[in-house]
Length: 91
Image (cartoon, rainbow, N blue to C red):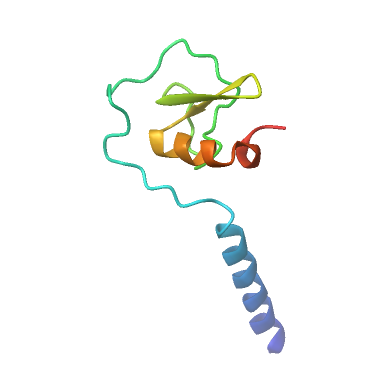
């Protein structure tokens, strides 16, 4: 009987610790100044490195780090990336 309780407790701790790794970015209802997606921009990522939203086809903003252009779903995510780009940049 103790095994299910211990297993449940361990899974809960694991889920809570994993959830803390992804920053909680508050996306504004209006994410950029133009209201348009950027077109014909070559970025190295298809998923926003900060909030993990798909950005393929809907890049709102970009930042360059180590000669690579990264695409973001919002200005908020770009700002979070710029605080510590080494944490989010692709290896």
